[in-house]
Image 1 (cartoon, rainbow, N blue to C red):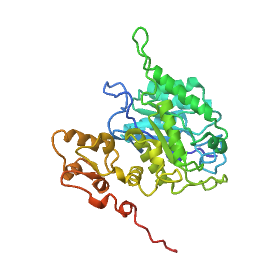
Image 2: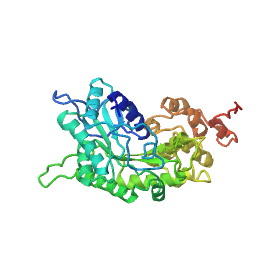
Image 3: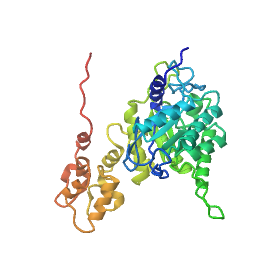
Length: 411
């Protein structure tokens, strides 16, 4: 078989990496190359774009080291039984691509994942060699995110954490039963153990010795995980409950939800809750409400009878419509906790409201200038010169926010 060109490998393995959710460099150690001896930076704004929690957009070279895999996970396009075109980068090829793309100002860092080749240890060793060569031989100071393999030797994951900014270990599916059914070669207990080891090593890297010396930083941007949604029939309540537990147990920076789409040659008869991308979007919104807006899981998931999020409207709006008796909220008097529950109000908007109302009474126009989405918020607030009247309790309020029906065609 003729060997593939580097460009052909890049086309195959960058496309294969689209199923891995990427994250940005926010939260990592500040490094740059202003000393003239090193290359790259993990700061600034940006051939994948990722958004940091603070809103910065950065660009990453996002690839698989290989899409060959010895596992046969039913939901994965790169499983061993899948009929896809395969390719594999060498260590030197990944290093060369990263450096050349950086020199052309295409990227700020590397997001590297891989299928399992030969064994978890063999695969993890090659990924570590890539990071080691970038850091120690090329003096690369840009951002590196490694998707680590939970079955790999702990010492390999330990070295990966000293070289990479962020590590991630996929939990795969929302429940242990689903992992055993659809990814029988993977062990949920081992996945959790590896995630716990990363947390312990990161916590340990903060402790100074008796001499006051701090140990080397370990995964300074933390760890994250990815969960396939829609492949096993788990409800959104189950998914968000698992996410809440993961955040608490492992101090994750982020849980990434990856919408499952049917694989053309799949014979596993996996269930599909449609539409997958809209469901993924709603889960991210609910995740945000749980982490930053003071919502409880039961509040978000009790709005619908089946434990799934409303796909037509965002979860905060769905909650507000189900609790109209708590509205309208007075922007000049009510608490931060209640302001955060107003549809169309974000954390920054609420902060501006609280800061400004100390000095003067806020009018409708003032709130609008603070960044609020007034098309949503206007039915749920009162302000100087504005009251929603009967709008809050109107029967057609939900219809104002849902997309109009579309005429189906027979052709």
